[in-house]
Amino acid sequence: MFEALLSVHDKTGLVEFARGLHRLGWKLIASGGTARLLRENHLPVTEVADYTDSPEILGGRVKTLHPAIHGGILARDISEHVDELTQLGWHLIDMVVVNLYPFEETIVQPEVTLAEAIEQIDIGGVTLIRAAAKNHQRVTLVCDPQDYEQVLDALQNGGVTEPLRKELAVKGFRMTTHYDAVIADYLGESDSHILKLYSLQSLRYGENPHQSARVYGYQPAQGPLGGRVLQGKELSYNNLLDLDAAWRAVVSFEKCSVVIVKHLSPCGIASADWQLEAYQRALDSDPVSAFGGIVAFNREVDAETAGSVSQLFVECIVAPGFSAGALEVLAKKKNLRLLEMPDLKIEPLVEYRSITRGILQQSVDLGDPSGTEWRVVTEKEPTPDQLADLKFAWRACQHVKSNAIVFAKDEATVGIGGGQPNRVDCVVMATQRAGEKAQGAVMASDAFFPFSDSVENAATAGIVAIVQPGGSLRDQESIDACNRLGIAMLFTGVRHFRH
Image 1 (cartoon, rainbow, N blue to C red):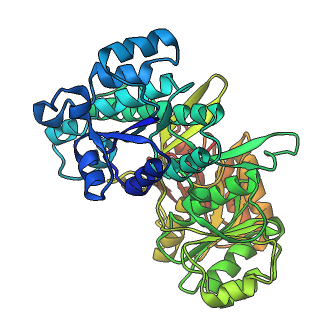
Image 2: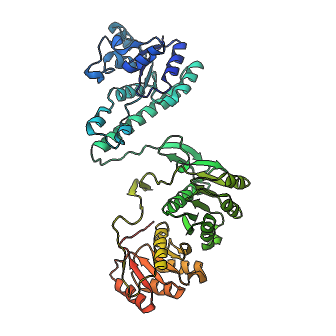
């Protein structure tokens, strides 16, 4: 007779799984609360304390930490081990069904105390997982209720295979690794960091067809970016990068806004009271680059806007929702991907980038830190309308690749330049894209001007006000140039590089 040890905190699906084991002739051994639940559901079960002839002690802190349990799990299927167990009156344990106290769920509670958190540090469960995982050549570890059905199916069709036991063992080791890392991070500063990622799907290829690719998430079975794909072709590696860039940009604006991204670069950003107007003005910023791009909305997409978007070839649309009318319009574009996001949050608030033999981590740039005060440094001050445009341009500039330059007017970009080794080239790019629309527009620069040439080029284009961090040894040259050219300029004291 096969024997299974059951000791779980999360009892989701447990009774059905145990009933399935019982039907297949398995003997059930269970600890305290688990045994009680099985008895209440009329399943025959031997309690751990009866099996070990040793009571639970210390208020249940010590239940399964006993040689009869761990000997039965760790014993190999060889005569020496079996004979030794038999002499001691113990048996082989063939399956361990276990999950852990909810430490991670506990510490996110706002009022949790250190003592309460420590009580949720599982000892016996972790030990059971490691023992069963180590001996997976013989023992089946089931540490995730989502695996109950798969294991029962295997048992009903010839038994759990060694590859499946190995897969379940790996899941167990990953679970305990993450569990210990969370505890270490909570109790004190750690000089190491463990990321727990779940494979969501393989992608057709990476940036180019000869590169393999896969997408991972922080939660199992989540959709891309945590959202839900409503229609369209499978998302590609490049689609996901562009969607992320567009979404991060659009949710940084409170007003109804639209962001259009192409190859990780915003080519149009606009805010308006009316969604269709915001879209049309974002598109007007650079309609050539918008072709084949990604469009992001921070409001539910309405049917009127959907009708306008459907007239342009775009790869994907991301938004917090789509009206029934919008879905009906966009359904006619069968290859168009629609990604519905659950909220307007950016999670997590840290970013990771791989480098050769390492990873960089930084906090997300959420805009100017609290308490930041802008100051006018020129003789001329911006008008209220110009100040509103400067605030918009400054927010938009944070999402453009450095050296970032944004021309804006009436809360819409009219020219964007970025991703070049020098700032002057980016001013020229923005000027070329804006054309006559630069007349009366404002300019934002993500970092200071080392020389006055950017200011002079901007004035020639028609720029009337500038916002930049300041901090250059030659700031006065730029200030003098603005005063000479009749341009208002503000310093923020904050830089927003995006490499």
